Length: 83
Length: 157
Image (cartoon, rainbow over all chains, first blue to last red; front, side, top):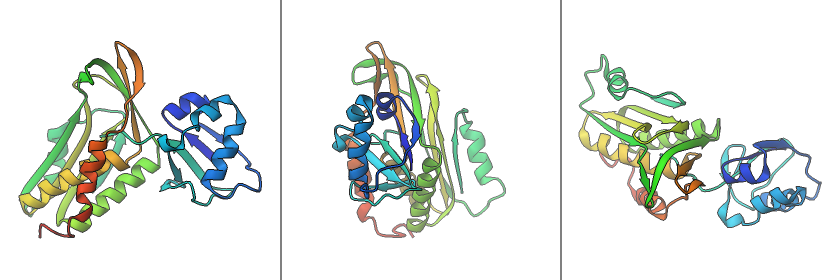
């Protein structure tokens, strides 16, 4: 999986992206978030409050119950503020 | 139909001229130009840096544009959104819509900027006298976008 972080999530995790192999019991975004939080204090802090985070799976807005698979691109970011 | 996500500035007049050159079917052009303001929440803004999600940004803007073209009879549309570090007075975003009649152009232009603000993956980091902070999404922007949920298709035809 390719994981991308934007805005405050990029700052708190200290990375814009990472490639990971999630454990076999990670099937959806919620499971992925729980596992990513174990990767370090920056990840745990960035992903602590899922109500403050939006997620996209393969560049489509997704939810916590959206399925994820090995070759997916999953992005985490705050609500958008362009325009 | 054009979507541009770029660091460089743009020339509004040249963009409109390019869109309408050689066209005699267009009767009305509407534009929205977004600029960097120097005051936000009472703080003086020195600059802002726009971050975006390359790939998804272009995809979402194309989706939004397609939605507008499904709702209004549009001859041309253009969306330009900048990223990178911008200072007060700088251009951020340009939305141009062209149609045979003004109503379709005006309504679709407002629709495009309202939807863009809540769906296109851009984030603003403001630099103020108090330091740097990420701009928070506003409920009023969600409400503005939600207004369009019930607009009948091709309402202006």
